[in-house]
Image (cartoon, rainbow, N blue to C red):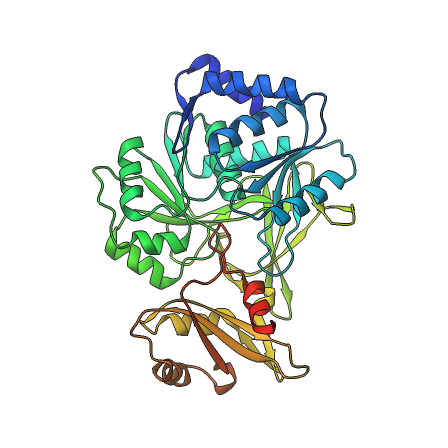
Length: 428
């Protein structure tokens, strides 16, 4: 029995009626969670690797505890995904070679290409989740609410499993819960820790009318822009910090100080440093314990052992606080000139009619990369005004050659813009 089932059994004995997980439709206490997980574990003992369409956090909790008890791999799939996506992920996960360290399977967001499956051993998932809960000072009996769908690492590992390891209560919400519904949930469940993503914090900044106040709000998925933070501080004002994690490695950092721009220091058990590269200093991590596996379509499984390059660019201060500065692929080469997408997008967001934006490099014409800007806008948007704004702030080679307006940028469950979809739209 791994640490997660043992912890749930301990809580089932000591606080049997304490709510463990709450979904929009049902609530399960620790005693019932332990009982249902034992029954499901008995059903799974003679079967192989399992797959769950994760549409309910209660079912996710029962399934992860059961799978950890039995020692089988469990893949969580996005309930909002399409059948071909589900089938492809199932095939990858089930075709993986046997392992002595089965664990939690997740699909990566596929922001820069095809989605992949990663499998992290159960003991390491539990240990990392407990360490992360410690950085949040999550206490037994406290309540954590997360707006992210439960198939995602942020909700499953940083939310459900972290709450269980802390002896807390996890509350899940419906997808894209609006400000009014969120405020009602915060009051109903007396939430102590709110976890969401920058896109939704921007939405909630219009106002959250509640009787109580969470002691901590956590943002993850993408860095908070200064504009998002300013809007939140003006509209709501609750304490807001950032967290950095990855499906492959788990919860990596937590900002416990609320320093603007920082995602904080490494979670205990995580080694983190920078290595210079052509695009800038890249974040490198090393996890403790048994390594995760990256699973490929051809049945190959790559062990993610030793130092791992994350693909994220960053800066570390003397106290070990990390600031994220974009992705390695976010530097676009324009005729020998390097263009940082983060820099250009920050300037674009300062034009008030732009709600959000994404800059991509269109390479469909050989030898002639074009900077293409996609913007979510209001009715007041004026293309010529935007171009004048950019020309006054950026070198000519950094100004996009094409601007496309859209009602909504394509995003992952964590709120990350799916740039690969934007590129496919350009090339179709």
